[in-house]
Image (cartoon, rainbow, N blue to C red; front, side):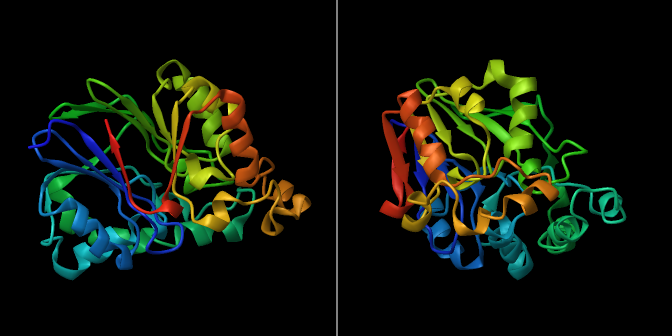
Length: 288
């Protein structure tokens, strides 16, 4: 057993993937997302056969959870020792018939991306699943996990990202805030409902640091360390990259506040962040 709680931020082995492993002092693991199928060998290396007390799936995008889905489809997740899986995804059957949304084609594409595959494996994990709700908390050894945000009906312009579970992991020495892929509108709700709980030592940058929550959220967090799931090109992205240059289209989609990582990095400079830990530099170990 290690004297410290350790967080591993796994480097990209597929584009955009997000994967974290927390190892407790009692040598149990907490897994966050995990990435795609091709990212599973790296995840298995860092889980190292440990008991996974909690596997938290932030939201239903392939770069975050398709690897988990592939493992369940392959052999029921037998390569991992999983005690409990936490998630809270948008209700597919209820939403797929909706038409009064900002961009119907995008909305339905989001619903039909990964959710159908997850729904196929849902019965296979029913005995170990928990639908995480805002306000709930649980403990794994010395780590206390509290959910500060879960799916809110009505956040439709950025459906999957704005359904991200937001939660804190608090140890005796550090507090880490995970923002998943939360966008500006979801960030507004998080700020309104939970800003008094956002202060943390370390923050996982929402949506890889771009097209993400507003500065007021980060100002409430006031982190000393930022965790960026970013390749080199993304970490050095301009304020308005080419794919965000059509501002009129974004307005039609009601996704106005979409900017590159350059904007977010300036916010962190203003807030006096001391350390940036980035997956472009490889897998990183952080002592909690």
